[in-house]
Length: 442
Image (cartoon, rainbow, N blue to C red; front, side):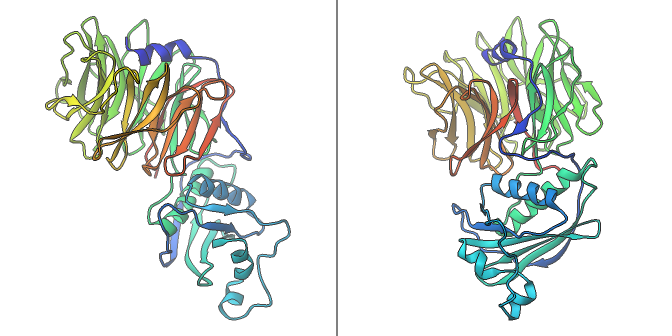
C-alpha cells in the first residue's frame, strides 16, 4: 500500500461540520436564472485588486453577506467596508450621478473603483455594477433566487457572485464550486466558502480518494473494505452510486477523470505492486494497463487539460517522484526534477486547469510542503512552509489551491491564492483529508 493511502487510513478521525472563519449564517444550495440588461466590460489589470463597495440597502441582507464574502474570497477585489451610516446616495449631485442614485464621489474617496448594488426585484435580485471612474453603471442582471431557506438558494447567489467577477476580469469567479473531502472516514462535500457541508456516504464505510467528473455530476471515490475495495461512482445530485466494473478485486484508488469525462484513470494495487489503469466509463472492454511496475509502484494519475498526457507518481528511481506519460501509456519520463538529498519524496500531483502548472507535495526536512511545477519553464516553486502541507487540488480559475495543513494543530482544509499568497482556512472540529475541488457547477 502506498504511503499516501496508509497515511490517510492512519489519520482518519471523528470530525464535525465545517464552518468558515469570519463567516455568517449558513443556507442551502443549487439553481439560478439570470437576465442580462447591460453588457459593458469593465477595465481590469491582472495582478491588481481594485476596491469594490457593496452599496448599503435593505431587504436582502443574506444575499449581500454571501456576495461580499464570495467577492472577497475571489481575491480579485479589495472589498471596501463603509463606515456605519455612510449614505449610499448623494442628493447634492446632478446629472448621471443623481439619476444613478449612487454616491460616486464618496465611494471614490474610500479608494474604490467599483460599486455593486443589490436590490430586491420580484422573486430575485437586481445586481448593478457601477464604474466609479466614469460615474456610470457598466453591467447589470436580474437573478431569480429560491427562498433563503430553500435548497438552491446559496448556490444561486454564488453564481451571481461569479458573474460579477466575470464583468470585471473577463472570467467567472469560483464561488459556485464545491470541495469533496474525507472526514470521519466518510465522503463529504462543502461549498467553496465553507457552508452547506453534506455527508455523501453512510457511517460504517471507509471512503478515500474523491475525484470530481468534469461536469460536476459524479464523484469517484475508493471504498475500502477488508484491505481491498472497488472504485465507486456517486451521483452528486441523487446520491445513487455503483461500483466501476472491473475494480472488485485488489485495491483501487486515486481516480482521475479524463477531461472529456469518458474515461477514468486509477491506481490498482495487489500482490504484484501498484500500477495505473484506465477504464472507459461507457463500457466496452477491460481496463487498459498503462504502467508496468517491475518492482516499482506507479500511482496517483492526473490528466493534463487537453487529455494528451498523464502525470503520476513512481518509485522506479527510489523515493516517489513525479513522472509523466502519454495518455496511452507511452513516452514515460521523469517530469519534475528533484534535488536528491535536499528534499524527499514527491506525491499527489494535480495538473492545473490551464495546463501550465502541476501542484504536488514534497518532503522538506521531513515535512511535506506544497510545490508548483512550471511545465514550460521546468521550474519548481515552494508554496508553503508552515506545518505539514499536502494533497493540493486546483480551483477552476487555475489561481487558487486547496490543501491539507496541520499548521493550527489539526488537519484542516486551507486555500491559498497563488498570486498573492493570501490564505484562508475551512475550519472543522475534526480532521479533514484528501480534498478535491470541483469545476464550476451549473
